[in-house]
Amino acid sequence: MVTLCYIGLGSNMGDRQGYIRAALQRLDQQPEIKLLRVASLYETAPWGNTNQQWFLNTVAELDTTLSPQELLQVLLAIESELGRVRVEHWGPRTIDLDLLLYGQEEINLPQLVVPHPRMTERAFVLVPLAELCPDMVLREGQSVQSLARQVALDQEIRRIK
Image 1 (tube, rainbow, N blue to C red):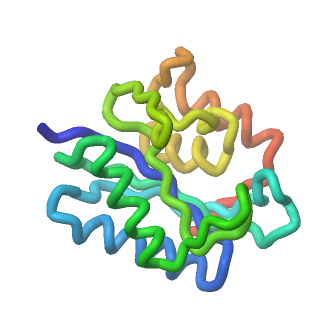
Image 2: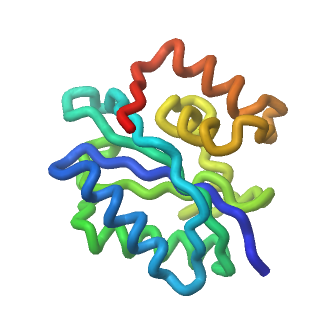
Image 3: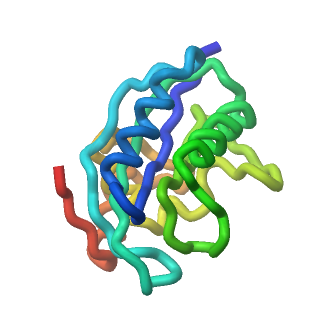
């Protein structure tokens, strides 16, 4: 069975575009994943620990035959391959890959919560997601586009390409 998923990608260390590009290539090389579309890149202020470089962010749409847990393991492996070290919560990172949505499923496990628990609060997720699917309605009953407009008023975000 094929499931439509959305992955958030972010980087704020070194060659930020290069890390995002490499992560997308690795996703696309997985036999169980078909990369469908990728939103524009957006530059956003850091969340949490604000004393660090700004992030580049995007969202990728993909089809997969992997289970949510298997997809999470692929994302974690790609992060590791690209030098992600988990030292500081909300700290700098070479690459961050978040499973935002996995079909219509709601998952609440210790290692995986889907939909991503804080995605409706973050412009760096909602703005690129709205670019891909503005009419999508989240379980809160609001469209992604409407939520993106709301949070973008309070958070600095700029499209870079």
